[in-house]
Image 1 (cartoon, rainbow over the protein chains, first blue to last red):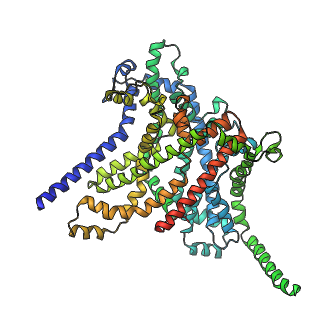
Image 2 (cartoon, rainbow over the protein chains, first blue to last red):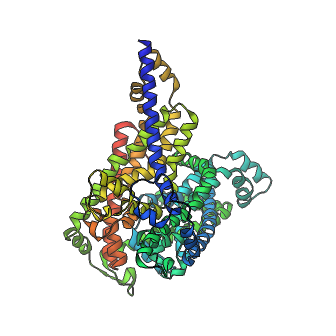
Image 3 (cartoon, chains in turn purple, red):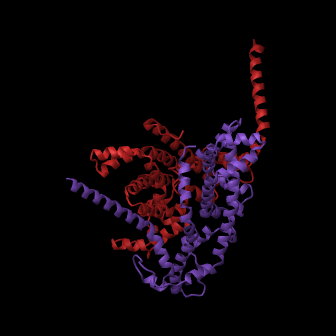
Length: 293
Length: 316
C-alpha cells in the first residue's frame, strides 16, 4: 500500500515537471527561433520548413542592414527622449500628488481623492480625448506622448498607499524642527520610499517604451516616430524598402525575412538584457498594487 | 422663529468658513504641490468627459463643443440601427467571453502547477521564463504572430502537418479569435500568475499537514485546500476583469486585423477608432465610445454587487 502511494506521488511529480517543461518551452521557443533565424543564411531559411533547432550559419548582414537604417536609429532616439523626459514628469507629478493625498488633517483630502478616483471608473472615451489633445495644440509633437499621460491614477494610488505606511512620528518631529511639507516630502518621505519609486519608474518606463497607438494618431512627421512605430512599419505593414535597396526581387524577399527577425532582436534585446536585474522589482510592484488602496 | 432658527446655522457656517481658512493657511504648500496634478486631471481626464457631450451634438471644430448644434440621440440611434451594430457587439462579446473563459483561468492553473514543483531552482526558471512575454512590446509580439502564422511561417507549417492549407492564417476570419485568445494566454499567463502564487504562500500550512495525516492525495489537497484558499484573490481579479470586459485589447486587434477579418475581429473600440479618427466622424465616434464606457461602468458595478452578495469580496 505504502509503496503504491509513493509510486503515485512520483508519477504526479513527473507529470507536473513535464507540463512545466512544455509550458517553458512554448514560451521560450519563439524567441529562440527569431534569434536563430536572424543570423541564418537568407536563402537556406527560405527553403527551410518547420521548427528551427540551430541557425544556418552565422550571418550578420541583416543586423548591418538594421543598424544602417536611419529610421531605426532615429526611432531609438525619439523613444529615449519620450522615456527619459516622460518618466521624469511622471515621477515628479505622481509622487507630489501621492504625498499630498497621503496626508491626514487636510480639509479637502476626501474630495481630492474622489476627484482622482472617479477617472478609474469612467472616462470620456477615445474621440473626446483625441480632440482635447489636439485642442491644446500638442499634435505632431513628442509632448503629445508625455503631457496627456503625465499621471497614471493606478500608480498614484499605489504610491499613496506606500506613503501612508510611513510612521507619522517622523513627520511630527520634522515639523517641530521647523520643516515645511516640501522638506518633509523631499528629505524624509522620498528617501524612505525607494522601493516603490523604483517600481513606479519601471512601470512608467515600460508604458513609454511600448507606446505606439497615440504616437500613430498624433505624429505626422516621420522623423518624430518612436521606435515602436518604425517597428510597426517593418513588422506589421511589411515595408523594408528603405533597407533592401539594390537587391533583385527574389533575393530581396529572402533578405526581408532575416531583416525582420534581426529587427525584432534589436528591438527586444535592450529589455531582455535588463530584465533579469529588474524582474524582482516588477514582481514587488504587483504585490504593492495588490494591496487595496 | 425664523431668526431663531437661522442663527445657529450661520454660526455653523462661520465655523466651517474659519476651518477652511485655517486649513488653507496651514496646508497652503500642500495645495500648491497638488495643483499641477489637479490641472492635469481637469484638462486630460475631465476635459474629455465634458467633450463627450459631442455625442449628443453635430460637432464642428469651428463652433466648438458648446457651440455645436444639439441633435439629441441621433448619433446613438444611427449606431443602434446601423449595418455594423450587431456584428460589432457580437464580436466584442465573443472575444471578451472567450478571453474570460480560456485566458482568465490559465494563470490560476499555472500557479497551482508551479506550487507543486519541488525543485526550487527549476521553479524559479519556469516563473522567470513565463513572465518574459509580458515585457516584450505589443508591436513586436504582433509582428511575431503575424510572421509565424504567415503562409511560410512556423506555426502555419506546423498546422500544415495536421492538414491545414489555407495560406496566411490572419487572413482567415475563422482563425482570428483563436489566434487572439491563444496569444493572450501566451502573453499574460506568467505575469498574471504572480499574484496567485503569492496568495498561495499565505495558505495555512497546518491544513496540509492535517490532510497528510488523513492520507489525502496531492490532487485532493489541491482541490480541497489550495483552490479554496485562492478564491478571494480569484474573485477580486474576476471583478476587475469583468469591469474591463468591453475594453478588449483594442491596440492588439488594430495591429492584427485587416479588412479580410473585420467580420470576426472588429469590436466596439476598433470601430470607434476607424469612424472617429480615421474617418473623422467625431460625434458618431464619441457616441459609440460613450456607449462603451457606460456599459463598462454598469458591468463593474454589477460584478462588484454580485461578488459582495455571494462571498463578501468587493472592491468598495
